[in-house]
Image (tube, rainbow, N blue to C red; front, side, top):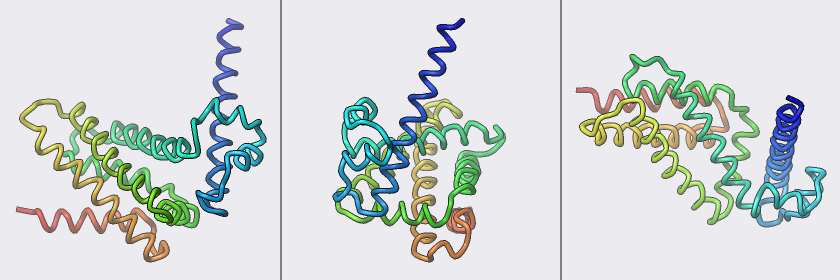
Length: 197
């Protein structure tokens, strides 16, 4: 029993350290830019030794990957929580809406600008959209199995990630004039209007 408790405490400590590294790195990226932020600066801001950083991440790029991976996990959980009678595009909309409702405007806009600040980060952002689309397609296939549905589910995943991308771009361009979920609703409503038969 004591061994399990010890393992649980160790896991919690590792999770908190990882979160502290990501938070420190993000704050430095936003303040100084990605290129100007060193691993030494991240370690100092997170109050860890440089070598401890490498227990959690291989590089600064690993932090960007972690930020994007955390979002994908949250989306998969949100999709699983949507009622089963929803159709695929409706389920995607509901899941995304639940996630974006908690976005803090200033920080999220700053992160979006940061992810567009260099060619490397723009490429990473584009690759992330493609990965999100694949992950969403996989989650949809689990929920609605059957080879005959694969083309439709893949299209639904493309529509969902495209709608999210457009909503985020509009939200950022307009300095979060409205809550992000409003932009998301507007884009999904436009999609429904254009493809309604």
